[in-house]
Image (tube, rainbow, N blue to C red; front, side, top):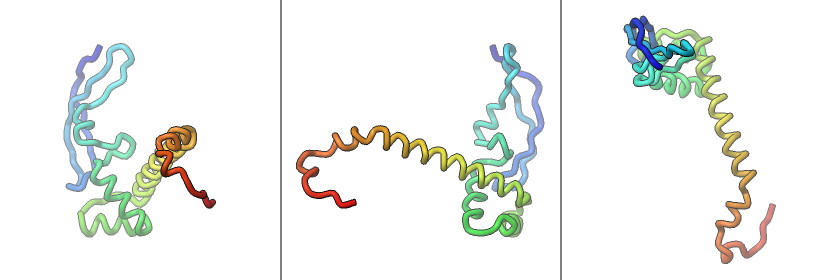
Length: 131
């Protein structure tokens, strides 16, 4: 059973700079776990307290330049102050998520290759396969 509790304060980094706001928290009476529906609405990353838009921007820049340069670029062009260490953590977590996703897809393709082969028409199976 879920019941609501008092609002809590949150500071989030976004493309619109730092956002400070109070949001309503919901808690489970049984287990004590809680969450804020507004956080889901804004797509706030739970680990780094950044919005999805800023997370994508940081990741894009971090692919092209060193983390310290990303920090300066964000500050100069968007007025966002975020540490190089946080930029590194964000980009590494996105990289890890992408790696795990691609690894799972590759495993699924490898384990189900007979399905892919059986879906090819017989007329297209003729010829030699050069490896």
